[in-house]
Image (cartoon, rainbow, N blue to C red):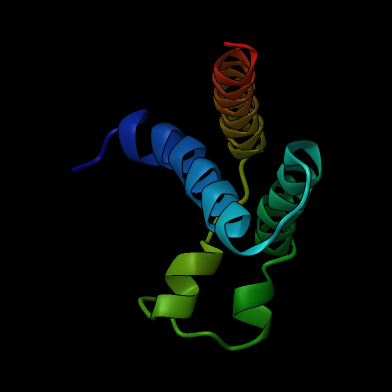
Length: 105
């Protein structure tokens, strides 16, 4: 299926959310710090695509590592990563408010 929204854009948003919560399950850091680390990882992968690093390293297309690193650079991916980070901030804000409300009662 060749779509222009679901896999390429929504997939990038979801991968940032997944990575954030994966990191938050093993690292006890503030939400903003974890979001920064998550974005740093996502932007690094995208920058590696810009430099065509997988090809330079001889990573065969179709392998798991090739899939993780991706193949093509796209500025819109960076926007999708930021959208995923914003969603994480909103989720953390909601969870924090609920926890604070429970303590207040």
